[in-house]
Each structure stands twice: as C-alpha cells, then as structure tokens.
Length: 123
Length: 107
Image (cartoon, rainbow over all chains, first blue to last red; front, side):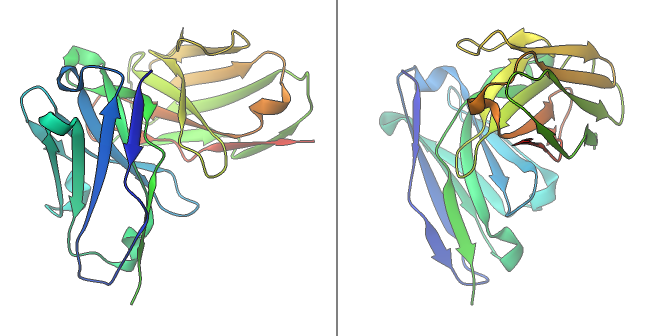
C-alpha cells in the first residue's frame, strides 16, 4: 500500500532553515510528482510546490518568494522540502502529498498524504 | 490567484442527516475540483476528484457535483466517523488553492 512517512517535529529559531523529509513506499517513486502543502494553526491548507520524481523538475508557489527548495533522492525514494529564513508565521504542519495529474497534465490533486511534520519557529 | 470560499464555515448535524457543503471559486475552474476530509491531528484524506469522481475506497454516501464556479459535497446519511473538517481544492491553475474549510460537528 502507498505510504508517505515524514521526519519528526522540528523547533527552529527565526532566520534559520528547516529540512523535512518524506519517504515513499508502495509505488514507483519516479512515476509521480510529490507536492508539499502546509497548514498553519487554525488556517487553510497552503500549497508550496512540487518536484517531478521522474526528472527532477520543480515548481514553487510565488508566495514563498524563493525561500523554499524541494529536492529528492530517488535511490531512497525520498523527497525533501527545505524552507529558509524562517519566521514565526512559518509555524505550521508541513505535509508531503502525492500528486495526480489534472488539467493539461500540469496541475494536480492529492491522493495520498504524509502524516505531517510540525515545524515550530520560536526565539 | 483563484479564491475558494466554502459555506457554511461550520455545521451541526445528527447521525443519519443529509448534509451539503458548498464551495465557490472566484473564477471558472471547469471540474478541476477536489474534496478532502481532515480529522483532528490527522492528514487530509482524498474523497472526491474532478468534482464528482469518488476516490477509491471512499463510501458511496459521499458525492460531489458542480462545474464552473459552484460545487457541492453531499453526505447522504451522516455516520459517526464523518464528523470532521472538509476542504475543497481547485487544480485548474496555479497556485493550487484550498477553501477555508467546513467544520462538521455533532448536534
């Protein structure tokens, strides 16, 4: 069965960076696009970006102004999301989610999600 | 960006009730709409994609409809495990955006 298992909770100081991992199993890792979505306390879900595990191409939300980098290690079937220049507003649960293609094969909905990783930014 | 607005924001209902949640897009998105269920401290779970297609394994009491800007998620007969928060998501264009959620509570 498809599983996405994320790394554990992190506490970071403002200005630092955080890197969250997402290990996939139960399907062909390189056959799908992996997305990252976050949810601040009491807020709606917010899409951050994706990586095409087949060719390494990436796409990011402009809302993160170059602060987010998504990478992967195909040998480990693992995707990573790094967020830099952290501020208190980045305190959230970060999810990886497998994308299923939609319009023109360029957009996606999400059929499987990781369990989430809480990132707390506090001085 | 396409804004997604759900109504109501919260809803109280009883087991066995029929419930409808509405999602409105700020511009037309054809049928590129998905619905998710999220329980406290858990990841979202996919329910519906392409506005009306049921995700594998999801009970048939869940259904979706709509196109363009107006969409609905209907639960035909509420079960105890259905009390959760529901989100819509558009995937017509970037950035992918979600509704603010509808919290379904037990009356």
